[in-house]
Image (cartoon, rainbow over all chains, first blue to last red; front, top):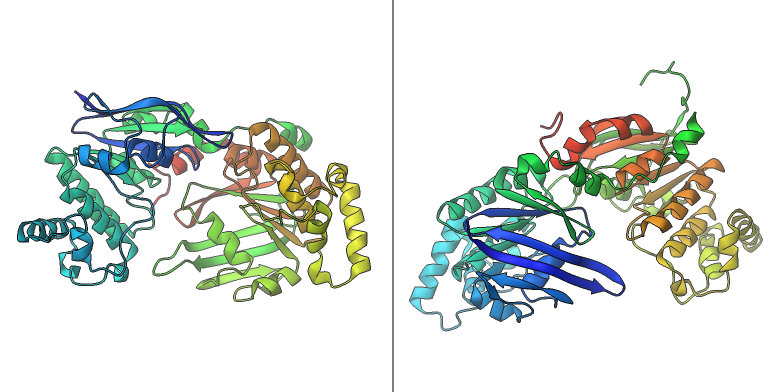
Length: 245
Length: 251
């Protein structure tokens, strides 16, 4: 398999705190890769570095072997990395369709048709004339996904696509990702919903304190000691237990 | 649990029964029941989205529950305002730092006694808090904003103690703290408990939190999945599955 997206030794500090520390992550072409880790482990920061929303202090990002480190967000997007955000960034006072056409302002019929196709694919075409602000939280996530898909990026980065979304919509989102992946689309997904991640991803990478602690297929990751340690935290020792005796 | 069991039997300070609560269209808590034993530390852990913070917000009156009850010494708190809940002695230390940065440590702690409305009583309690925590007394004249994250956490505890809480709610006190500082903060929690304060602790560092606590509760997807003594829960292998999926009793 070819590595399509790769971060190599990425470091990023905010104040004195290392949000990312020599972080190396690979996403194979045509795969659905998962990125998990406890709160504050650096997942969104890595997304921000990859997509140009944050500058790496050190290390590099490669897309199909090409160095794209610290390019601006619009350049990264143009090179083929699309992303969604944990808290969706839509224009609430534009209609759903207008949101889709923001990036193609001339509003040609072809652009409109493509936009409607994507809305139809994610399942919200029926809402195209409504204000985006009236959509439910889950529907906003679908709108953002549709928006990203219009540009037909090589890799799609999804930041908590299932977060705060009801179960039937979570399954719907998972099905859409599977369908896109079957057609060849590559994904990197940050998500706390473990059933979603483990059920969907070919490979899962686990971050803790900005560093990769494990990477492998879901079945292995689930029972990996280091992953459990990352999630359950450091046991500070038996002081209390000793008092109990 | 059995009423005749040995050791840790104690009456409940707080009894949460079939609690349903949430925001907007969905329920975050989907029928949560748990007891907080008098004189103990009850630690609630669980993966992101389990509902831990929603539970805290429901108890402290910041969120009105949809169903179920929250009884403090037999009195239902559900539907009360945060102010009423505070007056009944339930004091919360929030997840995010909440000191007034430009005020001194002493002034911040004095503010913890604001609702007492009694200067003399406030002064006596400040003295008591400083006696219990000499380190904090040493920072009395410093601006709160000049303290480290761990030190600020300790001052937040001291401020909460000003009301001599019937129940102290600690929401992820370890958030953002380095392991070494964590020990100091956890030692302070142990000290407050040893002095008689009943504590309900929500903790992200599950192992450290459970180790510290007399009782442990694991929540997942808005429900209680495991409970027992802190040590039983700590040593229960099912806890990993609750965090990483493929869960026990999920449904």
